[in-house]
Length: 56
Image (cartoon, rainbow, N blue to C red; front, side, top):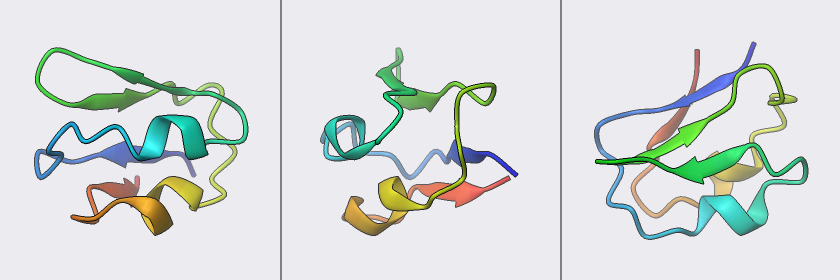
């Protein structure tokens, strides 16, 4: 199950460099996760200050 970034995202950028498979990129209003590449490790959720990444 891939993770998805919710609207709570504040675009701080903490998640992108923390992702071990580099599947997170900056979108227009929030960061986005490439579901096909995501390995559901939860690292992004652990570093996010607002808990925006959530299991889909």
